[in-house]
Image 1 (cartoon, helix red, strand yellow):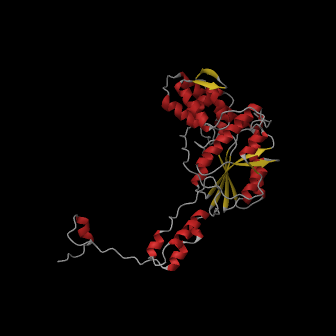
Image 2 (cartoon, one colour):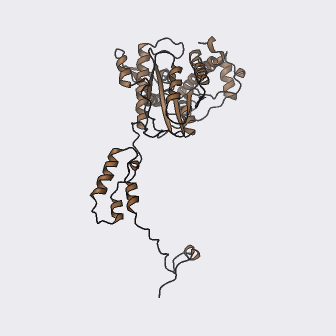
Image 3 (cartoon, one colour):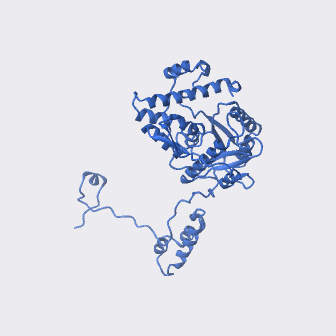
Length: 387
């Protein structure tokens, strides 16, 4: 005799002593549904998928069952954002990351603050003036510094492309804040959130103040999110209490009252790049390298700086221009720290986790990072009097 159907309690007790519940029979898709599935909107902007769907549907025998014709359709996949800009409008929010002296992806506080908002699109932008200038005093960069900057920017662009984005080089004949304000106004999407790492010198802070004035003069959908970064210690609530006139007093105060956050992990993937307007003065990396073709080449970037840090931790000699330097000099990392290819918090985390407290290299590295913060806090407090 046929067993009765299982109840919920019988199925929960263990082996079934009753018949399984009959599976529902779904009706075959209609011709109108098949026509809707074959529309180009399913291809998500990919013309090859649209052509394949139409060809496979037309190649099915006319007397085939509807479910057979449906099985011949290609699967719906996400569009390829690497490195083509997204064809979809950024409906929620478009994030703009203004890069200056933070040419990296690991432990990037401004980038992490933007990704926490879950934007639809992301524009990593690097404003390139007519003449590359030092962010400290505004003077034109030397040939060696220009070569280091170009190598670091090239490495950052490659890292962004591996994560589905790319570096946008925005040419600016005048002030860079004018180009940023124009980008925030014309970029497609909903609200625009512009974030950057706060500067400490008079040149950097003056540019930030002009950018705030430009955005305030054109009220709209643009917002600014400055983030503290490129330092070992967090920014204290009351900077006036920090002794910034004596390095020894500064070190004693920060070791007692300062706070060091752990490094933020780098993202595995990034939001897509939106379709930028054609009137934006975007410069390709090859054009920028062609403009400075006469300068010597350099090796720089996030991966190179990490390798140098690993050599420092292991006590290996650092090599530059074919000549071996003194084993384990921390000064070789100052260029990567200055341009932001290395995060001070990441370096400190590596030093603390891999070197013992009795290591001389550890004491030297901690001293260099602490002295670097001393100058940054002093510049942030006294402003134009330092730069």
